[in-house]
Length: 384
Image (cartoon, rainbow, N blue to C red; front, top):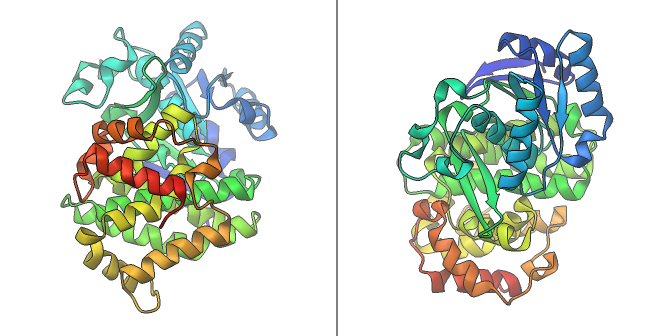
């Protein structure tokens, strides 16, 4: 299945379409791309072949791979330094959420004179940027989870303050996205599961958000339908290209849908990730049922409607919660945060940070710091 569509940007989907990378660069007038990825991927054949393909076709391509799994401001600054030193004129953001977020942030900052944190997604900060100086971006995800390839923002850790900040500008949306399922085939089952649950969290929180955005709501519902049908297959048979394709699509749908907002899962996973440097998708996967129960009074009818669309037996809030718990067990997601190596010494701090996280603003219930602490404590103990 090789198809192109234009929403929310130009998306090229199908097995083997990484072969069209140079076509994508040339379409955006990129002749000297900086390929931004993570250290693990930078050593793999898929990245080396992409670079060789670019060079064979006359593009001067360099690689920046010095980023953490939760990219920091220092990582972005180092990428900008290399971008300028190599006189790059565009970015290939390649990888999972870390590579994509870092790549987009480098593209934003490369032509600016202000520091990164001046573009935090608060008020109209994005207007501070020189929009004409933002580099063009080709995005190539290698995991089906964050959907960052179709997002207008990057999540970057402020390591000095141990907090994740959202950096935003409309022109951070990559102009061309390549969804090639062959690039995800080698992803281990544990990461396929965690990233797939991240995609589910995006669709689910967008659907649950009280913000009125019927287009995003429809996308979220169908995204969850694809995840229900294809995530187990992608986890248990990593070479299943149909399952891999549909999970890439569902991931992009989740990030498109969360223009409607996110919620308490992300309000908690962001500080947990910043403080404990834990995997974002796994955090959302563990937190999911605890946040569902905490929000139940305001989302019960909505989730029952979703259950009917997903064709769950005895469609109701309880049947959806049971499906989430069964799915997590089926694909090997832990039941509690303690299993991720997170201790209980800073849970009050996490609760206080969650209230301040931008994702909290669109949760169905405006929880207090104490209520967030109670939720994260339940998730730490595994008490559902």
